[in-house]
Image 1 (tube, rainbow, N blue to C red):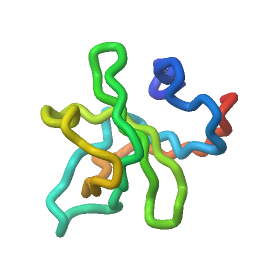
Image 2: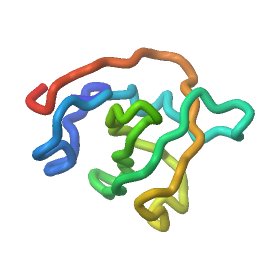
Image 3: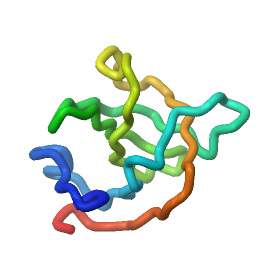
Image 4: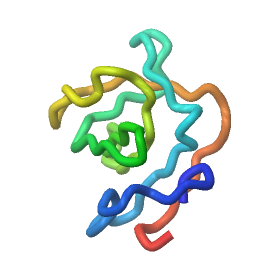
Length: 96
């Protein structure tokens, strides 16, 4: 589960370890303020929210819920500048 909510069905299917980011604390940022860049692999609309699955520069996968209009137009390979407003990062395997 991510912040008390299960991952959308199929989001992590067949994947290895995911870096789960507390979703309400991931925000899009100006490049100068970004803590990390997320290269988009796919976007999924589930439960009334957009979920982005992508990779950090080191190849680590990230699944995060981002509340922003326009995410439906993201294409694989797009790069999002992101930052955290607080909270925590948690490593988990795909069964977790």
